[in-house]
Amino acid sequence: MLFGGLSVGESKELMCEILEWTTQFLPEDKPRYLMGVGTPDYLIEAVLRGIDMCDCVLPTRIARNGTALTSSGKVVVRNATYEKDFNPLDENCDCYTCKNYTRGYIRHLIKASEILGIRLITIHNLRFLTKLMERVRIEIEKDNLLDYKNEFYKQYGYT
Image 1 (spheres, one colour):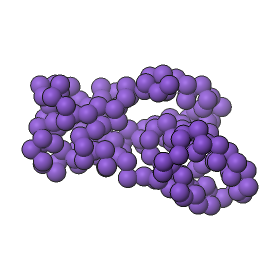
Image 2: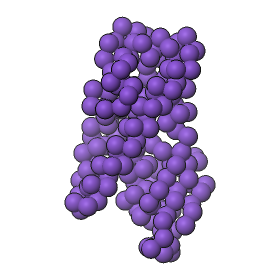
Image 3: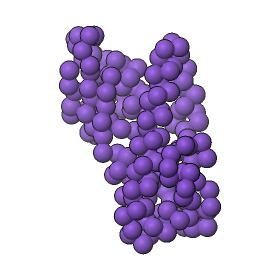
Image 4: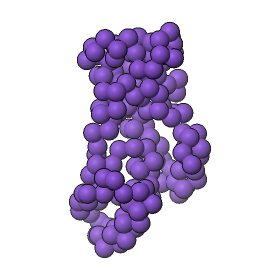
């Protein structure tokens, strides 16, 4: 079952309300796919309301602006503060980018309009979201998703 047209300007609260109202009419034995949702909070909210799959251009779109999703929130490596930062994008990440490149070097690539910078951040962003959804599955199995959501929101800086 396919959803589209949500998360295109309405508030998160309204999106959640619409999902709660509509998912009750969908068969539980069919995959439920929500198009255009990709931020960590929206992904978790969608799963809490019965959505099985989402897709979005977000990981690549924000990478073009030098933005990485990290375990403590967004990092905009384009900013001057990262010019001499020799840390990975996210200390808690196991992706190729974090294992091999620093924030400072990626910033240099982005500032020089080198496509490699965008690719490296995209690799990282995709891994971040994949790890998030792996954890969401674990928390569902433990019947602990709501507690995990609250923990994640606090760590990530959502209110």
